[in-house]
Length: 141
Image (cartoon, rainbow, N blue to C red; front, side, top):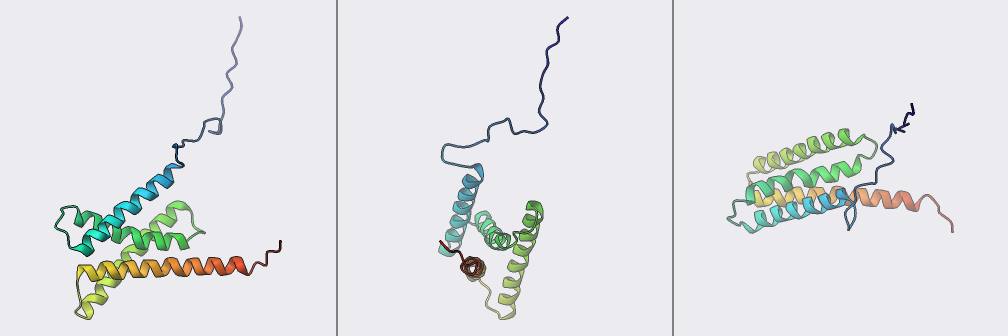
């Protein structure tokens, strides 16, 4: 009797990577999230009466600071980075709301602008820090 040997692999390195014609799935999802968040910010700032204004603005308010905080947390594992970034995003939103209520200047448009500004400043500081660390490495060519 003859036996047929079947070679099994314990890793998934034999499978081809799932790729889309234009690139990676994570790039596609990041682009879609950026578009959805941007639409939420525009709808909130324009004061549109669309029923999508609330959910899209909430998505923007949660993801904008989370992306900025998550970009700074390069040393954590992915799940830890996501959870920490989401918690930091909630903290940023609560601090903005608390500050606006304390000075009696509450408005949803002002909140969107404040969260956008804080997120953009965090990303700018991170970019400047990384740019400065690359310049001090002393690459010679």
